[in-house]
Image (tube, rainbow, N blue to C red; front, side):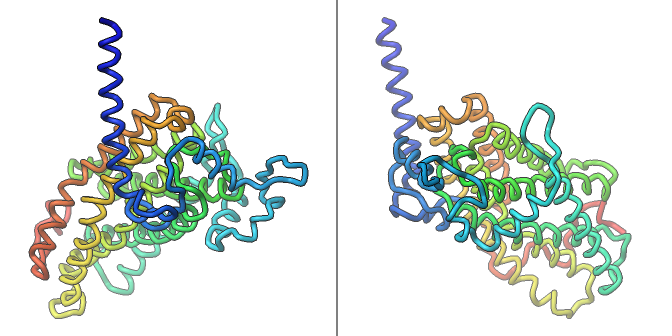
Length: 373
């Protein structure tokens, strides 16, 4: 009886694994060298096989060797350092220039996180000055500070997406890969980008309190998103694996952010700028561009990407070897929660596409009591 029960369980596990593998290969098997569908778009080089041996050979091939055949990850000693993408050299330099402040009991530093949050706060202040003194927007109007926050978010998205593009292109893409297997220069770049995103989450959460005096009910989804995102990124750095999954998720999460925040600025601007100004003519095109960018990424790319990450973390040998199973289960729950939580915005963007240039957020749209003068 025991053997029959175990056989049934094993059959079910194999069935689930086959389904996840099939769904993941829907995106990944279309090309042997480039990943065309998933969150890293067409940017992540990888081999066609998902076997453990291929995983090891791909990753070890990125490491340099000394004349004695010993592995060497030192940034200066690696002869491949001349091929470091220029944009990553900037992040590597900034990261190495910052002093290191470690989380107690770990080798995970947080100095660059603090530095990033500080810089983003300064950028937000600059945008506030621009809107209030150059555009003469009311400093007491919640829309003014919201626009400053949206512009800061765009700056963060553009900076991190270009960096992630370069970083993800330069390493084989396996969601559960170990950080230590990559060259030291790449580890520094990845840590800088992960801490930049972590710093943004802290900065944005702090300003939710500063702007409103508390976290309003409408802000709960955003605040929860920031908390679980910070946990996910930090856990991958503590464990020393899974960082590629976090980086690819950040890329797909941030790639549509400039469109979304441009819409946020334009929908508030049409309520503060006089009728007939250029922003009123531009707003319908901004809204439809946002919808066309957001809907396919969140409705199709995101779920397929998460299916593949789920499969790699839970149903592959390298995933179970590199990351403790309880960490993988927790991370998988987080990412599925995030993508399911975006369903209302997916539906909204689809409705916008159906409406064409007939805008949803018009000049008389009511944003609630916080936006009343």
